[in-house]
Image 1 (cartoon, rainbow, N blue to C red):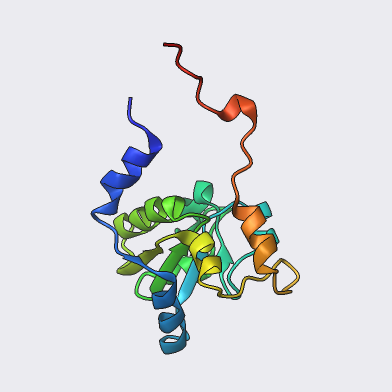
Image 2 (cartoon, rainbow, N blue to C red; image 1 turned 30 degrees about the vertical axis):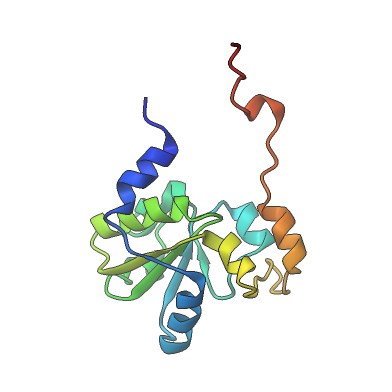
Length: 157
């Protein structure tokens, strides 16, 4: 059985990644850059990069095609634009960037380290109301909150 992290590693070789400081530079140089946040809506509402659009990973492929309930015209028309895909840690965005490449997007990259790294680099994040989120609150949000039943069973010796 393959694990999620192995799927990510296999995908990695075909997708370009950029670091948070590179995205800061790209945003200054290209005002037409499209930042696609593939996290769930509740995650996006809590914090995101200002100006990014939220397209959850589960509907991404239909959102970038015409004639679907999830269609986002800005994304459909972005196949030649510079697109940066972001998520919490950089895993969902990597898979999403790969999907976009397969669907004909010519200039797409994934944010390595995700928004967690963006916050560590001390770049601003805003909430659904447009207010800047305190970096310490963002850190708490990014910290995994696993319930006991989500942890791998302990192997008895």
